[in-house]
Amino acid sequence: MSEWLIALEGTEAGHQLALGLAILAAFLHAVFGALQKGRHDPWLSRGAIDGAYGLMAMPFALFVVPWPEPHMWIIFAGAFVIHTAYKFLQAYAYTKGAYTVVYPVVRGTAPLFAVIGAWLVFGEHFTGWQWAGVGVLLLGIFGLGLYNLVFLITARETLPMALGVAVVTGLFVALYTTYDAYGIRATADPFTFLAWFFFLDGFVFPPLAALRWINMVQRPALPPLLLRGVIGGIVAFFSFGSIMMATRLDKVGEAAVLRETSTVFAALIGWLVLRETVGPRRIALMTLIAAGAVLVELGG
Image (cartoon, rainbow, N blue to C red):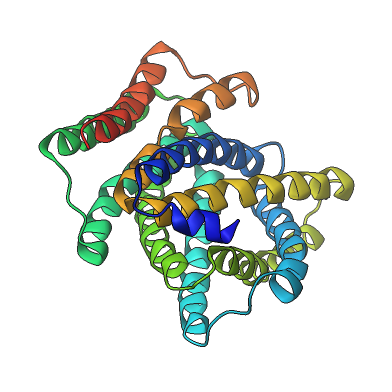
């Protein structure tokens, strides 16, 4: 499969596959966010998910994929630091704000930074229509943030903090998207990067989550939490793997922007599954974010 994927790089077939992978990543990332924010403490959920995908990736990293080239270890170290910082920020944002408040701002802020990163690192350029799409997307983001500041009643005292942390988290999403796109292009076999990334990335949060669980007065039952971790780990494989493959096959900036159609999926999940109040105006603003992403693709 590696040879087949590599042969598609830079082709029209590769572009179409990258488009499909980016949309798949959008849906799966919204599911992943809901799993982390769901009924369990987000720090515990993150620890269970990371531990699950780290253990699942270990045999593939050690025995299945080709061993990483020597220069890849420095790249893995950088990815480890960036993703750890991102996960701390994401978990903290979820403790301060509702899923449908935090998630769109995080995922919507990221594309602007990712487009700039793709220009600086990979020399990618956007057309006028694509920049218009980014503008529409940002209009939806800042409109959503303003709406939440004015109308949201729940957790009003922590809302400004939640929105601020969400913007910084979006910056780290763009940073890891650009950095990981560089990493997956730096190795001969893209599955080497994915397997070793998941294996190494699974070390930090499980012990932190275990310590948090031990110190809780009312500890949640472990079986449902561990089951959430396994499901989240599988979702993470396909979500992260899809977007990384898309960035190897085609332009990093376009893939990053298209992934942010996840805001629409997030709105539906927050409303249907998490029972959070969304409302027609917030749905319209989230859809505006997605419309900007679509305009970026059509203008390319």
